Image (cartoon, rainbow, N blue to C red):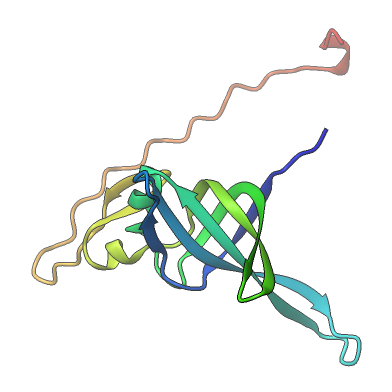
Amino acid sequence: MSINRVVISGNLTRDPEMRATASGTQVMSFGVAVNDRRRNQQTGEWEDYPNFVDCTMFGTRAEAVSRYLSKGSKVAIEGKLRYSSWERDGQRRSKLEVIVDEIEFLSRGRQAAQGGYAPQGGGYAPAQQADPYSAPAPQPAPAPVQTPPAVDIYDEDIPF
């Protein structure tokens, strides 16, 4: 049995690039920088060493997601590794990339800055625009916190 799952979080190294296959499938490519923290043997100080990971996402979701990402955006990604090799100009080339299954935005994307939609709490909600001439909207009162009733449970009461 083998398992091919990858989970990373980091910042985009470039704006996403969109293209389409001959059959019309949307393909989004982008890079993510993740740091590896190691102690420098000479100084004893901890240092960050960047790793650059190529990522690819397919389908209509890729097109939708690309609108919310830009260079520097912080994301968390889950996917699988894919190895590719080819020959160009007589040189053998290869790369290892992440095929993205799930992506979570950890920072606001460029649409939020433009007044579009921004991810909030797993969904999409309109980005708030500041209006210097209006008073802030009233906020609903927070719901009172209810504490559960005290229950006396002892180890002898648990049936296993």
